[in-house]
Image (tube, rainbow, N blue to C red; front, side):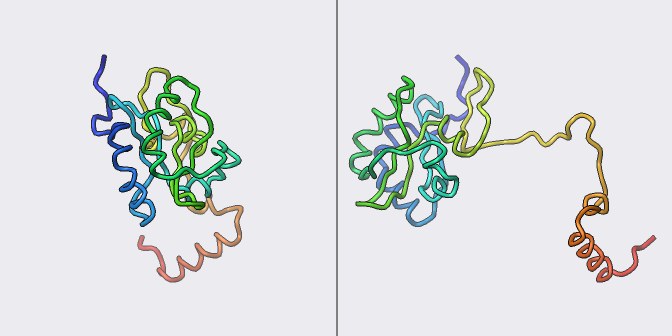
Length: 172
């Protein structure tokens, strides 16, 4: 078996043991979505409720019917990841205080769906919270000038003209 591309990925046990710290960091806005799992394989994601809400998570991937308390998540997180492995994990789980969610626990597939990302090719281990995108031009594409880009937009044309006037004549 090949070595995981994510050797520093937090384990399920490590995340469960630090739920209070994770909750505190998200509450203070000091954390971003992160994947975790055993053996260096991303199996689940914790993201902020704000990101979930901003991306219309309820409509996109649904949610568990109640907000789960952090101490309950500590006990249930290993079971949740086991359900993800079996393919029986239900909707994302909202975690927080008495009524207001702060965190959301999702499978990696649910997180991709929430973000609108593609699934990785078969056999590729992929952390959906760490994405890279190919920036090579597509076949047949050609470079274009800023004037070509602005040709159908009078506002952009006006802005370009103002910029050019501020800069003065181009050196030739």
